[in-house]
Image (cartoon, rainbow, N blue to C red; front, top):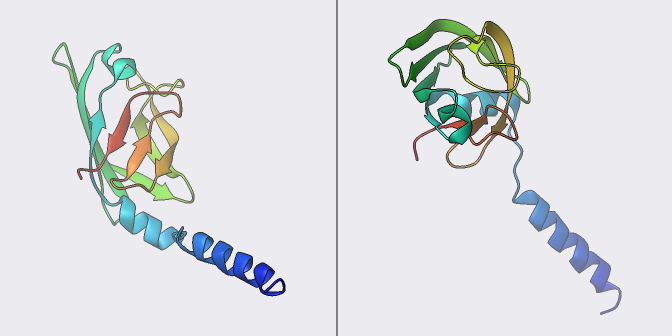
Amino acid sequence: MRNCLPVLVMLALSMICGCQRHLSPEQAKQRLVGSYALAVGHDCASRGVRSSTLVLRPDGTYDQHIEFTHGEVVDEVGQAWSYDGGVHFSNFRITATGDLHKHAPETEASLLVEFSHPVVILLSPSSDCFYSQPE
């Protein structure tokens, strides 16, 4: 029985590790495709953001729609996105601190992704604003 213990431990560890499946880049990109709504936390609300939607298409293009509390609207349509461990956007309306802002320049942005259910795209690891797919 003593000789079996290391084998049993290795078997248990391999079963635990096997449950956490890693996505290939293509699988990850397929999971990212879809519509997202912004969870408007204090960080976004303090910048006057009322709502925002993000639509990622399989052809590598996206649309970003932001509505501000004073009625202004910002639309980025048909812009490029890609994935390589993080999601990258061209002409994304975001500030250097990870805030959505009506005066933010169109910029290249690389954002973190949580492949949870639903998928979540973080504006900043320390922000309470994030894009989430519907459940």
